Image 1: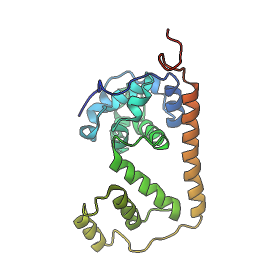
Image 2 (image 1 turned 90 degrees about the vertical axis):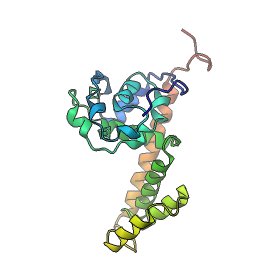
Image 3 (image 1 turned 180 degrees about the vertical axis):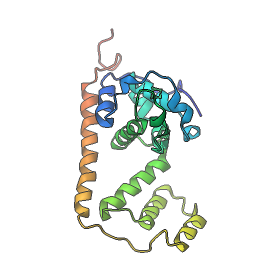
Length: 209
Ligand code: SF4
Ligand code: SF4
């Protein structure tokens, strides 16, 4: 696990906290850095920032640091942190909001395989209105080019009837597709608006203070 990386961009964007609060529905300002979320997080070993560091970075407007982190993609949404947080914050909501923003901005380099999984899932649900594991796995394999990984596991699941051969459409799948598209467009619009509102940092045409 790495902590703050001195080589990564850490410019502050004061509008970022408002955007995170709006998208997550969580009052990120309440976090007082007790670290209980980090101490109980089962995905910590996969993360480059701890959950409490993500909260602090969101509070202080370190937009690039957060959106380019691996942590936001590693959150399993297990809610352990929410159960432990003395301020009643649900970090899974915050992580989800940050992942949606990173996805909308196409910032997926920190965890390309997790992002490929996310994209494959959304594409499948966007077409069928529900998941179709075989189709999703096919898309994932094409994106990651790891054709032989997990073949034995896939065969086992198939043999137990956990993976169906044929897809099923949901009535109203076009509506599901519309909702997914609108959600993505909304996240992009909010991201653009927030970036446009942020004061230009010194050295990029902004006023130095
Ligand atoms: S447990 Fe809650 S208050 Fe404590 S660091 Fe985590 S988010 Fe902040
Ligand atoms: S919801 Fe995410 S951040 Fe919170 S404990 Fe689970 S994996 Fe960690």
